[in-house]
Length: 157
Picture (cartoon, rainbow, N blue to C red):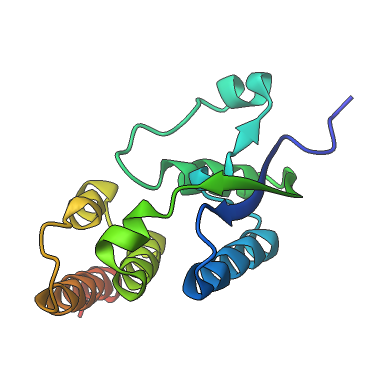
């Protein structure tokens, strides 16, 4: 007997009601419902037997939740997104800024999609020592530079 769902997560909730964070909460929940790839801050859960049989989390420093859920989805197994919200801290958005944190996360996810090594991505994710406008330029250089090098490798430009 095959269970209907092998994994799941909750809708995203944040511990702040600021308008920008409410939008992020809604978009994050919608994204996970559409893609069926929830992130770890949505309290991902998985059947133990399935998790162990599949090799568990991949040994990467970032995007391990995305890799695990993507593996489940590629196998054609079902992931349930529950409507209840799990509350996640909004401190990173408060500390690094709403726009920067959101753009950085999108850039990292896009680069991961284009098979950029999580070892490269984690350095940018943890780089929050620059808390001024130059960080946007640094993020843009990192994103477009990495994306260009991935494109050159892929299409032998």
